[in-house]
Image (cartoon, rainbow, N blue to C red; front, top):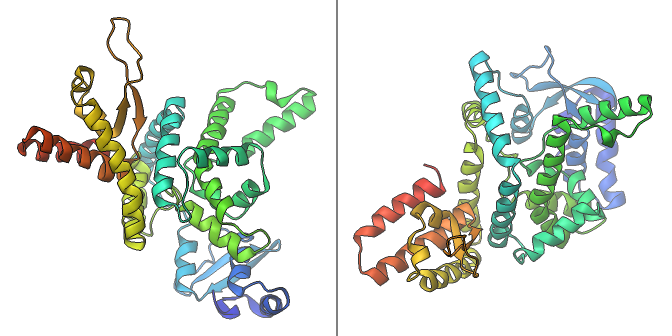
Length: 379
C-alpha cells in the first residue's frame, strides 16, 4: 500500500486516489495510514464477478458497488482471509460442537478469573513498554469500564479484534431494543439465555481487554493517526491474538473444529517471535518469574500438603499457603495460574530443575518435562 495505483476502480476511483495522495503533504498524515483507514471503511462482499486470477474483488465504496483490482500481494492475501472456509455438513456439526465446548469453558467466571492472571503475566513478559502485572491490567479495566478515550480509540482502530469474546450480538441487541420501544418497556428487563450469554461475553471482553487497553494507553499518541494504527496493532500482540488464523484454509478449518487449538498455536508463535525480537529483555523479565517460582518451590517442598498436590496441578498453578484450612484441618493453599507458555519455560521447568538438584534424582527430570509438555500445552 505504498502507491495510489494499488487500488484502481476507473476514472472516479483514480480521482479519489489522487485526492487522497495529496492529503499527506497538507495534513502530515502518511499515505499508508490513509490507505489503512480506507480499507477499514470498505466492506468486501462475496460476488460472482470476483476474479481470483486477476485479483479483482467487488466492494462497497461510499455506498456504491465497485470492482477493485488489488495489486499488492499482502493486501490480496489479507482480503482472501475474510472469506470463511466452505464447510460441509459434518464440518459444520463439528464446528458447532467445538463452539459449544469453547463457550462452556470460556464463559465460566472461574475461567475469566484465571484468564486475568495469565493475561497480566503474559503481558508483563511481552509488553513493548513494560507493564506492571495486575496493576497495569486493572488500570486497563478502568479505561474499558468508563469508556475512556483510550478505550474508544483502542476499539476504533481494531485492537478489540484480538479478543476471544468478539462474537457479534449487535443484531440481537438491536432487535430487543426495537421490541422494547414498541412495547414501551425497558429492554434491560428482558431476561433470556441469549441475554445472559451476552452479559458474560461483555464481562469476558473486559477481562480480556484490560491488558491490551493498558498497553494502548501507554504507547498511543492522541491525534497521530500513524501512532494509533501502529499502537492498536501492537496491543493485539501483548497477549494471544485470537484474531490470527494463518493463511492456510486447511489449518483454519482444523482450528475451527478443534477447541483451543488456535490459541495454543498462536501462543507458541508469539513466544518464538518475542524471544527472537527482544531476547535479552524477555530473558530478564522471565528470570523474575523464575526467581519467584524457585523461591516458592523451596518454601513449599517440605510441606505435606504440597506433596499431596498432583503434578499436573503444579505445572499450571503456583500454590501459596496463607493459612486457610479445610473442614478436616488440612491446609487449603490458594492457586495462582501460570501463563501457559512463559509459565512453563520460566516457571515449571526451573522448578523441576530445582527438584532434581535437591533430591539428586536425575531420572525424574525427563518424567517432569513430559508432564509439562502434556499438561501445559495439551500435546
